[in-house]
Length: 458
Image (cartoon, rainbow, N blue to C red):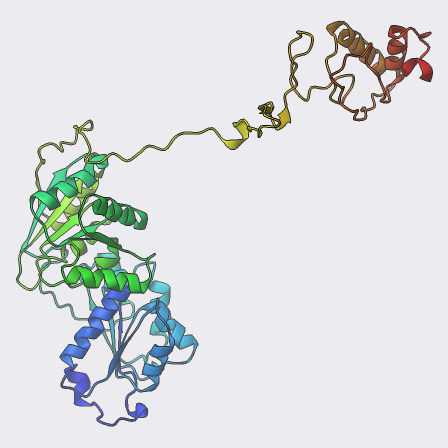
């Protein structure tokens, strides 16, 4: 800011205020926070600044850029949107800052960062800031930096010394109960809780609300207005618990935050350092609590190896890892298991005061007739079609006729016939076409001459 102010212009002309410094951050919340700091540090300077990020309307940002801006704080995606619409000119940038540099240079952001690097002048100052800086990221940074100098204010990958760290072993299905217990018994008033997934953050916030603890969630699926509102309420002590994904772990500054809880242990050990770095800031002590299930012990071991320190492990009475049968504060109602719809019986409405017959496979069942057992609905009779009851003797002779028919000619499928009426009939009427062998058998059964004439078959 001092370097830029030495050549700052007091003119109100937009042409006198080209973009001279570009600060790129991985999250919207961090971009807003950094731009607020720029305004604070430049309160008595002639520099103009603005913040551009996604999730909000782009037109106010375009209007601000047209008015002339010296310092731009941006997230990569929205910055490239402005570049595409030609609403920002980066050809006079003197200083390029990558905040949370290790996150900005991982595989998720590196394509956008490479595009941004191609838009700024080759001669510039690059500044990279981060609490952790893995060796592979350091090598990648060296590919676009010239004779870089490293400034370290603390040992690499180490949390602040004022942060007390403790791990509570607990079964995974009892973490919520333990968290509620810690918040209530210790009377915690401001707690930042980290989960691994967005859905997990929403679910935990809702469960804490049902337990009588004011809570809200902040993550990438929420609108920017909802995220800003939740963060503001938390900073103003209107919320006891703010549940967040790692979106809030990067650089977020909450004044005098006393407690940070790792509800889910991070898969990347460096993220642990960023998470607990939200407390113990600016000389104020803080506490970092980790809820560690048995399956998360390897993750805890990786964290201890990274920070070169053993984290104190304390078992909370009543929440021992093997105490899976301990009562919950509030049992969630179990959903009734129902069979798939295709296996459910369709109940037909009552007709004329009588309950309609149940259906099987979408077809109505036929009632028993003459005391004979009911055959499966839809079974093929007499070569096809659905009809009434057929005696076993007739069915056996028809089967024999079909076998003979196969020797005489290929079998032809039968046509559909009308269902039989409930009234008794002397003999079944055959109206469909049949092969020559079937007609011969039917003619003999019905008193014909057996020669398979049409009259015999009818």
